[in-house]
Length: 389
Ligand SMILES: [Mn+2]
Image 1 (tube, rainbow, N blue to C red):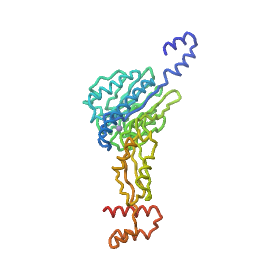
Image 2 (spheres, rainbow, N blue to C red; image 1 turned 90 degrees about the vertical axis):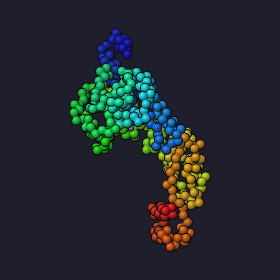
Image 3 (cartoon, protein in one colour; image 1 turned 30 degrees about the vertical axis):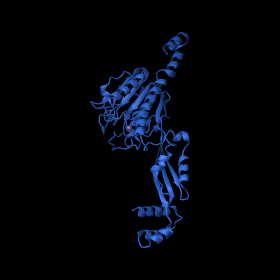
Image 4 (cartoon, rainbow, N blue to C red; image 1 turned 135 degrees about the horizontal axis):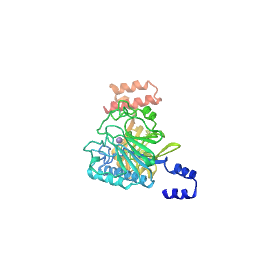
């Protein structure tokens, strides 16, 4: 770039140089925003078998390494990591060195880290046990810090947690920003709940200060509030509460403003599907329908939870564990949830239960409109409860 400008100085007039600087130099930055990686997580409660939990743990690392590599390859100016980079409980010094060595490789990128509630920056934190390269900035707890990048005309603000909960009013003494610069804030906190113990944030206040971008962490679902504020979400989903697309945010800030987009980046997705069955379907039909729930390439890549709804033939006696085992060749991971009701023979049941509550319940329900789905559901659910009880 210097050489290019030098040549222009010889060949062109001043206007051309100015134009060149505005176009590609000072005043235009590219960034990647991530967070909530939870490196080290052991997936003990995710309902996986041991080997799959281990694989998932490795996939978190792999995705982290892919993100850092992408930042390096794309030559972005900044990689923002908005907290919960790792799980304090499961992380070792060796893990921290591996993390550091990965970041070390992207030496062309300014890497900005704030700590969250799962990786708080306490005195004895692993963050403080390794030496960090110059291009890595880790913000400290206590109050909002700032770091200026003069050559980029950028000021980055950030704040790290030092405990597992935090209700500090970090903006109480915040002096505001210099609007001649590009101002970016990186934070781990909760914008949805004013009483949150996870650093409650006031969206209106954040928007009023004049940041060009507010990169948030903590909520694991990616939420792009506007071009100027977003939760990046967990780039690799951690459980069935985190269904659907997960990725990283790519952004550009230039004289036209800020532009961001979510790039899908996860190795796998968690997906939840509902399958409605009816009393005429046999075991084979049901299994076929489950297999048809998605294309093979998706089935082999993602983690599925299939909820069975509707009415099931009373003779079928579905065993979900056996079914999931039978389906394991067709899915990377599948779990089944039984939300069905049994298709009872009402006449026979009533006959056999003339003098008890089951018979009474059936007689009461038969007086109602059994074509109505709500009433039919109530009948089946009630019968299920009475029969099983
Ligand atoms: Mn998190």
